[in-house]
Image (cartoon, rainbow, N blue to C red):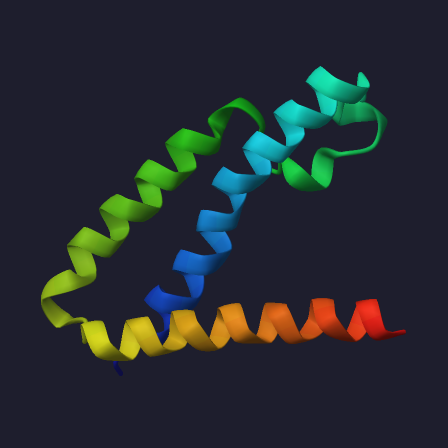
Length: 93
């Protein structure tokens, strides 16, 4: 079985934790909200965020010889699109 679509989807999900780390830091810096008081969603790995990303990147490199880049990219695009549609649905309601 080709794991390329899984790689593309996980790239979006795991990558979002890096952005969440910045959001988390900004919430603490600008609003004084701690992770334990309301924004742990944006910081699921805590201080290990970069370590998790590096582990994911290592896993992808190990799978790369059998992965189809175009399938991975298409899966990533679909995942981004689905997140966008969900957010637009929330905005509309």
